[in-house]
Length: 494
Ligand SMILES: Nc1ncnc2c1ncn2[C@@H]1O[C@H](COP(=O)(O)OP(=O)(O)OP(=O)(O)O)[C@@H](O)[C@H]1O
Ligand SMILES: [Mg+2]
Image 1 (tube, rainbow, N blue to C red):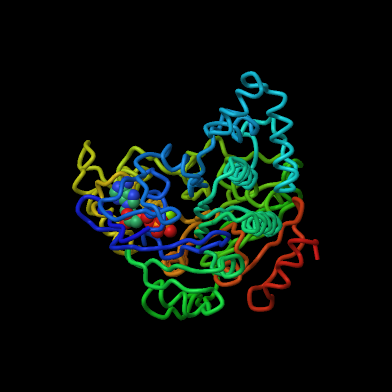
Image 2 (cartoon, rainbow, N blue to C red; image 1 turned 135 degrees about the horizontal axis):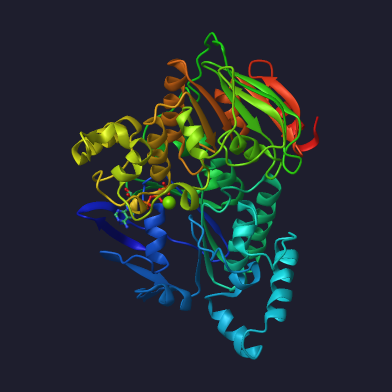
């Protein structure tokens, strides 16, 4: 791709960006939220049109005006926001909408469901070595499995260039290793892979070369072996980050929330812990261990069968999410696309929706107030957006997450439940989010967070609860534990 330029509403987001990809290599494309990574690859896969610049394949200039053009040139994409059809089965999703579908369909005398199932099972088992029930619909399988289905679909359709936009988000270590093995395998078959990720350790592990984008410009393009982690981070943000976790030691206050012997049998059993004023409690464990269900139970989204939860001495019996919100509990879900974002609405609409009272002027909603409040968050959180009235779906992934955080901070919650609060957010923006969380607990509030990044839990939580197969196997004090210990309990119950 040579000297690619692209602007949205007159704001340039790619400036003479040039990258080259060789046969049989995996190239890491990295940069902060909003740097232009997704935009660049969307131009390559035909989803966006470039304003200027050229694309060459095997030395010949090519025109890519549509997704179909790119498909015909052997370019395959695993998008950042999953693009599976929730109500279709795993098997149907793997085969849908690519040229193989047509070949397979014609070979199989049109949609032979059985053969499709067998093929889908084979790909998932042989290539990715996972057992997924291919008859289940996408909405009925966990997030991490959806990601694998998305990957299976892209590799099955036999492309020359495979673009992976944050493919490991939501995957556990074991699944990641499988994906990395697939990448090594694809490389040995002469395929080219573009790997976009905020997990720089992964990028350094799997990529032969790394390209760093900053504000739409390529700032570094070099062999991974020639770079250090510090070099990469510095070039991404243009300055050195220190104090990655802005944790301050504070005297904890009274008990706010008390969880006693909570069980729903299916997902979690006998969970007990206290949450104090100014405390941040982290809940960790492998995907599917029940940690998310525990968090969701505290917001009334998952029912429990025995045990009790008290908030400031009063027993909580949820009738609905509304009753949780009335008690000043807020919940930030991990799956932005399906659970949080109202895609066809503006940034300011998405910010204010949970706290409409704050933007009332008499009996009417005040758009002026809405804008003022939104602007305050935009500057505090460093949200990259041209104006609060922009559609939220036009923001980069990490910036959408910041808007979601703003939404919940605006409701002045006393207890904030965070599910993977920094998923898809770059290093620098993560620090912004940690600072916000710290400021919020300093005011006497409390946080419970579930995260699959143990480093961040150790970095900002006071107490870390490790869940293994639905049970609490350890409650660790941040000052006395280590990443190794947390990991050991998560994978083996100690
Ligand atoms: N369809 C669009 N309309 C308007 N602006 C857009 C559109 N798509 C992207 N942008 C803007 O272009 C910039 C680059 O966004 P892009 O999605 O490429 O970032 P990114 O590097 O992929 O970030 P992230 O790591 O958060 O996914 C952002 O400021 C974003 O708001
Ligand atoms: Mg992106």
